[in-house]
Image (cartoon, rainbow, N blue to C red; front, side):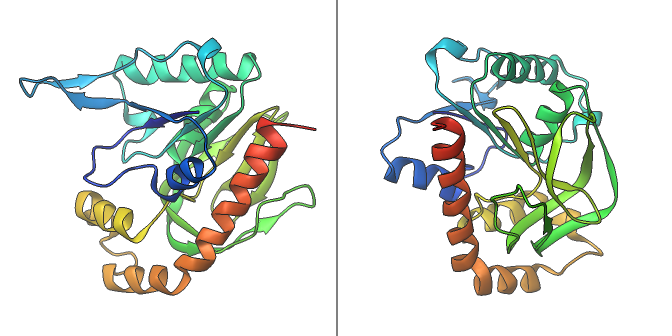
Length: 231
């Protein structure tokens, strides 16, 4: 199981998703897109594992915006995701990871009309096995998808769950833990200016964390049993 992360935090970016995978006994390899050489020089790692060596990929979020990144690494990652999709290897993209999937499928990422942050619920289609909420959300972008991509759930702001073959995109963050939320507030809390207050956000998460984590486990059951190992 390959996990691709995009932020450097003192806590794991994979949150409860990584925890559940380890509990279930999956062999997990983490590919950190950004790091530093021993001398402190920033480094971007686009040397992805060969698709033949992995069974599934989960790509996590980022404070970057797809349309603002001009560096070559983003094209390399989109090309890698496209190759994963073409080969039918199960892929789960979370927020930024979902936006990269949309780009690889011929769609695009644009700025949303307003930020979507905090606990959300959404409307699900009759084919969507994902609970409607609560889920944690933190984004100011949305995907515009080709017509052949199935949208399974959405809010008035953005598509929330979409699927093409064995590739799935999620606009929300099923991986969040209290520790990870604190890291995001430290790194990107300025994005919340004029939005939901930090203390209100912490309290809302504390009230719903247990329920949200139950939803995450249900989502992963679907991905792992229904997508990774289809009947």
